[in-house]
Length: 174
Image (cartoon, rainbow, N blue to C red; front, side, top):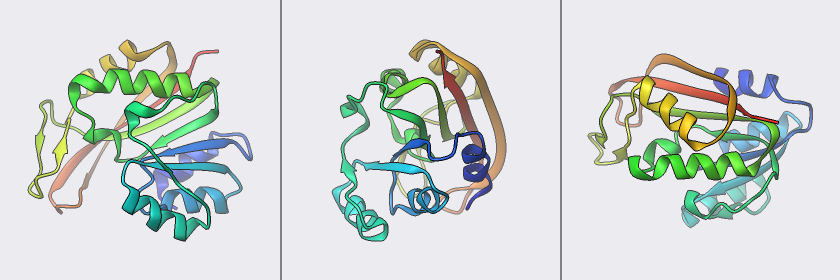
């Protein structure tokens, strides 16, 4: 289990219901399930959802982020390296949908490649590349959050290039 995921889960009540937003191949959902959490995996790609479904032994919801209609359904949302592909003009609306999907007191974790201007990586994948201040402003505009934390760390992405990462954590207000 990655350090970020372990730290995130340590802040949740045992058995909490987590929406794994952009579950990809299901590796994080599998780790959460093994740790005793109820997990709803969701991905916009039917191909990745099929891969994750086989790994998890359960169906994976196929939906785009702008199709999330859940209301107070989850104790937490894990969005590791998924919301970073949302166009800048849509991110506040997506964060508002996540806010609505969380129960009062629910926790959000989302990671982004930082940069300050949208663009594409060497694999031609789109990223919104926020700055720390932009990410804070997006969160503030999307709903009443508390305990907003934005952490930073170095790392890399799928293209192998050095990358600065931003980690947003916040609680939906009661």
